[in-house]
Length: 223
View (cartoon, rainbow, N blue to C red):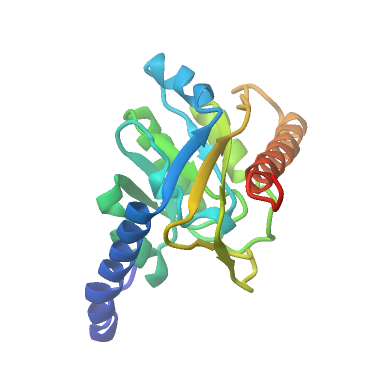
């Protein structure tokens, strides 16, 4: 990774602190709860860790998933990734730096190593550039190599802004209600072949869409 320019160093001194402040203010003003929290807690009560998979659209609030201890998240090696790395660190999120296009093998190894050292993992299976709501194979390979249960997770918000970005990024508004919804886990056997991995990929995609729909229905008008 190349050294940062002086302009980038100035931005790195300012922007992550601003992001951290925004996240902290949101966390203080938003009322948060969980649905189906018994699913991941069954794993944690056994002294094990897991992989949480969520759409890139729902990335903003994921630092507030109540993981026990710290969690590792795959974050790009670019400048925007450095912003995110520094902004989320105070919330117990460690960066595993890598890309789905370059350095993907080293990123996968880094995630496996983090899990083996006793950490939970968080990943956006349609990030960082889409297609939106389409699971990429990397998360299935990660679940295969770690043996970790793979949990779809989403959140719904009572008041929010939806941006006109590729992922339709969601920004919950202050003083809104947010509910994190845990889907049913998927296990990827270590000996499964490519055909079975593709079935698991489609299964995760379907469950994550279903979990997201369940989260959004909680705040539909008249519900």
